Amino acid sequence: MNQADWDSEFAKYRASPEFVRLNSRMSLDEFKKIYWMEWTHRLWGRVIGVTFLVPTIYFIAKRRVASHMAWKISGICGLIGFQGMIGWWMVKSGLKDDLFDPRSNPPRVSQYRLAAHLGIAFLAYSAMIVTGLSILREHALLKDPKAALSLIEKISLPHMRRFRLAATIVTGLIFTTAMSGALVAGLDAGMIYNEFPWMGLGLTPPKAELWNAHYSQKQDQSDLWWRNMLENPSLVQLDHRMLAMTTFTSIVALALWPRFSGPLKAIMPRKQMKSVNAVVHMATLQVVLGISTLIYMVPTWLGAAHQAGALALLTTAVVLGSRFRVPPRTVQLIQSALKRQQQRVSSVTPASLKHSTGSVQQVVR
Amino acid sequence: MAAFCRSALVLRHFLPRITADAAKSTRAFTPKLFSTSTKAAFSQFARTRSAGAPSITTSVFERAESTAEDVKSSAKPKSSSFPKTSHKSVAYWLLGSAASVYGIVIFGGLTRLTESGYVGQH
Image (tube, rainbow over all chains, first blue to last red; front, side, top):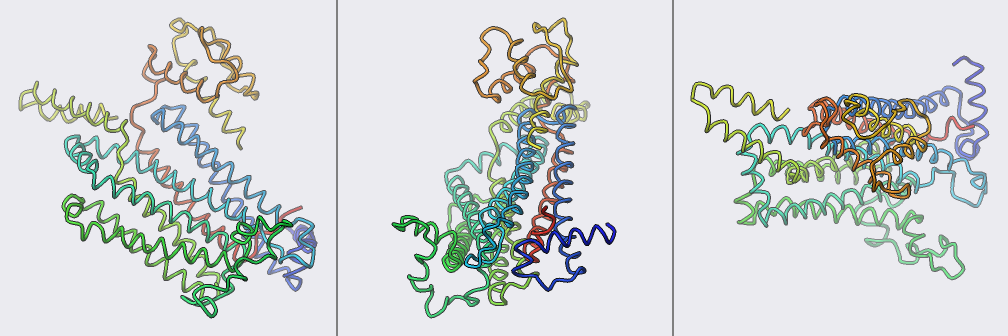
């Protein structure tokens, strides 16, 4: 971009509510920096879109995926496209004319759209991880069908099923906490009550501040509770804190359960136990990051680290869940692979045993 | 982007017809590989299916799902039917894409924290 292009882009930005209200002293150099950030983010999004769409078409056309997997990767394609549209919608919401109204809050991207944008990103990410791991798991299980079936038997035991349900609930809690964090970010609600565990004079701000009539937009105040939950920075921050503490406690309980419960301790395999440990370690780190971000009044690098920690924590939880699940389709494949393996072993002489394992792998492909 | 993905889904169902032996198929069907009108393509699809075909109002996915099963069960050369297990390269590509999404999430957070998200609107 030449100087004339930069001047024209800077002129357009100077007309925005964001500039007029917050950044009126910005120089061209500073503008170039933030322009680059936004431009790179959009470019990266488009790159992700293309690097996902083109291989999807290729894999389906060349029949490298199972038919159910073809549906899944097409679905993720749609999710990515939807994400791009939300991103566009998000930036648009920052430029509404009524934001010039001096009575309104400083111009911000609507915290709802920010949460939607983050939510879809987390969902697309989780979907990619889960489907990718499921393919690798299927290959690993089919390599040794006998061991696979004994593992499947183990994770179908009632105690394990209960544990798996708990792990699923924890995953849901982590996701919910992350979304409440997006609301905090959207409202800049991390800039108040920069202390822990107190919030002002008590553990929570006063009730009148949390359920503030100012945020209600209806005459009869019937929308008081949800308007405050989503738009009052004090309540939004309190909700995030409460969710975070609940999630952390649940994760610690989940990690202690197989250590102290006799029946579960006896049957929990090592790989799954390692996964549980990963979740609790990451959760501890995330809590440290969160409290630090708050008490240091959200320096940029800490805020970004806290967000990275959230997605890392979600990853550990999703991986934990996947290690307790083997879909019926895969179980069927394992059973037929075992049958074929047994037929071959029983019908060949010791000399040709080498060939039998080779053909099992051929069938797997 | 959404329309592009829909076209990709449509494209997928045309491909088996191209590689299959036309004489074996009971459906007279001319594939329109580069049709831009997915609606027209789907209605043509529905017309050429055998008796008892679902009406236009049924879910697109129901129709596509049963067609996929037809593709698998009818006598077709191996190259046009889906494998039982997906290739490992698909898994690596998915995990690599996930890593890229992780990166863009961090970058998006930084964009937000540096208030860079207001740039570039006309």
